[in-house]
Image: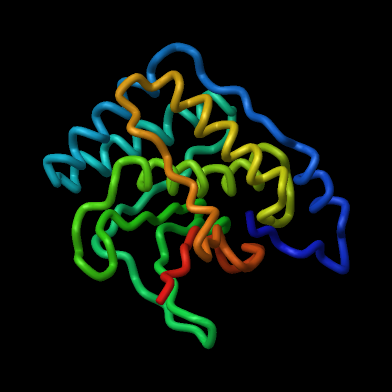
Length: 196
């Protein structure tokens, strides 16, 4: 698990984020239905239906957590970012000023529809950033151990509840990264390093 380094200033928010390890999940089965719709839409490669399922997911989750609803943009192929130490795929990001999540539905190189687990994991990751700002009131959203535990807890508990849920893969080995920088004024992102 890669985490952000504690900031030099205003460490209290960082430490508070680190202490929150779990999140409650809705128990009414509504997310199960939405996940099934999302998986069917992905298998059929219908981006409009994927967007509709994502919107329903965010509406349901926002209502449950009593936060303003954020928007979502479902885009085509993931962008590749080349840096000094390798190439990274951008899976999704969140912009706090506009409360907008962006996710990419296709792989960067082959342009194939990504797996259901990867797309759902990315959405959960970015929604956790939204919760940091709107539910917990943090002025920033760090990738702390607490953030990772909240995300893992949400995905694993959701996985058990969603019968057709094929599983969110957490790529924590092989050079994986769930973001290398704070999101503050820019955005949070979910990206994995491509080895080789």
